Amino acid sequence: MKARLGLKRKAALGITALVAIAASAAPVSAATVTHTDTDTKWGRSDHWGVITRNTIGSPVAALRDGPFGSFGVTGPSARPPFGRGSLGIEVADHSTSLTPPSEAADFGNEVDFFGAPVLGLRQVGFHVFQTGENVSYGGAANLPNIRFEINPNLTATPSTYSSMVWNPPALPTTDLNRWSPYLDATTTGTWFLTGAAGTATNCTLSHQCTFQDLLTALNDGGTQPVIYSAAVSKGRDHMWIGAVDGLRINSLVYDFEPTMVRVRRAT
Image (cartoon, rainbow, N blue to C red; front, side, top):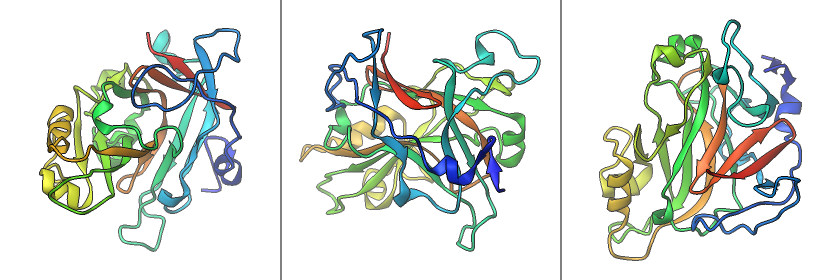
């Protein structure tokens, strides 16, 4: 596809530069508080964008307007939950020469969470725009993920890298073709760790864990695990075309707008 979500791929990957970060007392964020907007509950972050290391193929992960609708949908679910924009994501399933041939997209932040304690995570989740077509491509659980790159610091393995991934629960049919309610990653869906850390904790892709069980497994009495980066991700599995907004990490909500990532304090 030469263009997705009405944007040429070149424009989609050239994410607009963003400005200053707002924070709260949340232990997971090392950012400083700024009050540059008229509403002092808001700030703006310049550290979000496509994580090139983790991008495979030529997917789209771009800030965009809407989506509004689908047609016939009215009320709060017919528009992004915050502001007027969102993070549009599009990945294809059979589009590369690799094995598997599917694409992967990562839109995240490699600065503001670096060195923050994994065990300090208390609230994580987002809103998603899911379609019936996406369900037909990969089933009811064909949805984007939240992914933290971490140093697990486990005494059982010398590995210093793992991806800590949340798989959301399947949405009911009443939440298709519209914006979903908030999906709480600490109480719904399942989590897993990649690599040696997954094996050591028994929280793997084939044997996934609850959020609390994962934190308990990482808290092995040694050096505490720390975060490298945080991202919304999709792939490598099924084709998916949709959007995410209102990514929450502890007491901050990351509002994806067409020209910036706005940072709100959760209420």
